[in-house]
Length: 533
Image 1 (cartoon, one colour):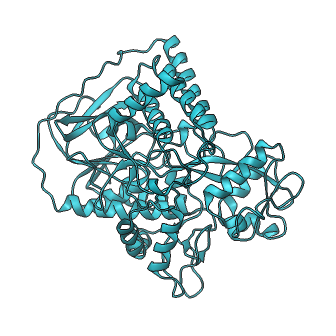
Image 2 (spheres, rainbow, N blue to C red):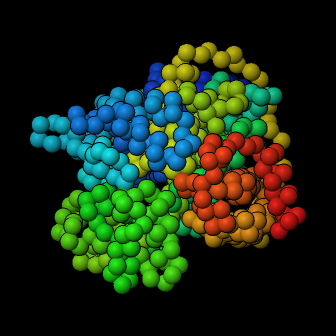
Image 3 (cartoon, rainbow, N blue to C red):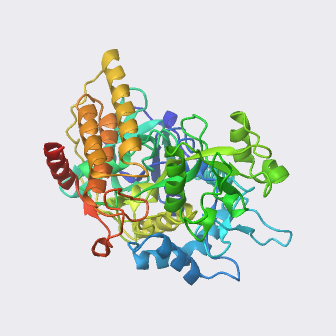
């Protein structure tokens, strides 16, 4: 069995150097740990393993060119088209080519993908895919089923030690080398330091920095900030994907109405019953996510509302084929077999993140990154539906292979400078909660589906004010990531994919390239913006 925190003393661990430390217990982290077996691995996760992972909430499934009617080349081309000109073609080629093998890995771990009576994988189609290539579990339960299978495998793998309930705060470092991780007990002040020969950052995305998101609270950008503070290059931070059809029922996080519903024929209508995607895009409801999200957002802003109509196309099959969405809707008093489902765009996925190469290596030696926290170049400006789980497993496997081929020389680790107060007065706690609320509100309002210079400068000013009252490094990390996203959005003066500027509504061919930044660069952008705000 994997070893839990109760199996060793919960104090400063500095005498021994761990072989590999993985920060994050989502799909990328667990898959990497299993691929590294039997090499010793410590997995550190914020919430109980699997519970705080966005992977578990993924409804659609995993995209892979498996059917005889499909091809790697078609999957590659669909991905490149969705990425709006800034994907890394070699990365996309690699990811789509290795997809089938990774799906079979998941099958070997016990993932119960839907199959027909002859044992062939059943495939569904989602937006911007030219073929049905999304492997699912009971319609909308793929993420949960994949995570359950991997957690079971991890718990019975002796080489994997699991530390649950600890939040990453900083990297230990020596020059350009990352030599370990400093973590804090969730909800407390106990810290542990884990010196390591190799560190894999798999801490997830940034969803909970936004007021409306489909992501769990643990997706709060702390890993990206940790890497930026250590000097890592951050790529494409301005590109945030908003899922068009989150259930607009006042919940936080907001339940997701999977894209597969539209793949099965569900329509988007406004309060007057008008099918508003007509005239917006030839693919109608199955247009790329950014286009659908903006169309829905504009209907809501105009006061007409936006609704998913599943009554005729899915109807009585809804409960059986989409049980997760069905439960969420019914819990909000909406019967999707008979009622229109109110929807709104919600932060769903961050295409940007810590820059990595084809093997998951970051710009810092000793640090790899995988999953949503990483920016491989596979998604470009707009991720193709169900490519997130694919990217996570493909690059987690490549990281494991890369680390297996290395025998890093252990280095002495030192504590990064930390100025947190040992305790936190209740008043300061209240102020930090208010700071988080300010951050989430300003990002949703000013760095959301539609953006402009004035709003982005307002966001940077709001974040600066909120950050000034934060004491805990874990909270400051959230502010830092919000600042990076807003500053990167201000710098890109065009519209492309998930990044849409009302003041620069067209794509600029000269900017058809990825963006790269460091925290030093961001600080300079912020300083200039605040002077001219």
